[in-house]
Image (cartoon, rainbow, N blue to C red; front, side):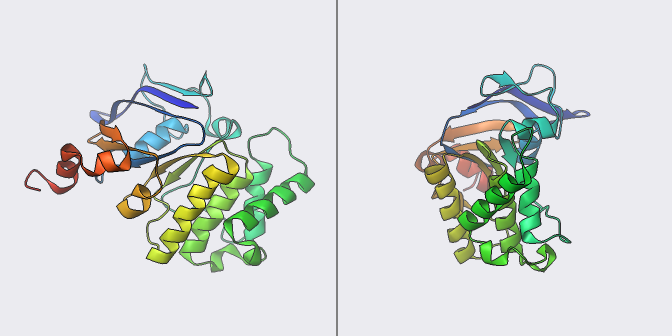
Length: 241
């Protein structure tokens, strides 16, 4: 579904992402981990059109190179993301927020009736239907993150990029979130590419883990393989670990 080849992003003389290569398949959950400053969010931004990567980078989604596309055009193809800092419309209701995803999702034209149906379906799936008439600004952070997921789901994504969606949540909320992510794949057929610092969350649900360190891909493998990788342990804990 997604094939990234030689992705490189520089800021002046600083190389933030250094010729990274990987693929993500259908109905797959892939985790992206690494120390702070490793280049994880820059990688996401370069894939989704927020940043323009360097010449020579190739990002193919369903066989089409999307590097030159605008962010909204990439989203309409079915590659959708959430953000590390929650970005919802606080003055709107929960239902109205999800409607924005349904109306401006991966199709050129969606009727208001169809958008409403998609929004109800997304809210029911995520578990926020009882909050649909609440003003979004009154929601706690955990429910705002659920709302971002519901809005993304209403846009009918094929690949969903999640940026530290578990940060700031309680252990119970994290368990509920990871179950929802697993259901997105198992029940909706959506692939997930997930940045996370909470290892217990991502290790328990990901099929594969990619590790970045100083902008380079340090390792890739199953959660068990990554957990036992000496280079990964050193990157997180230092040479004396």
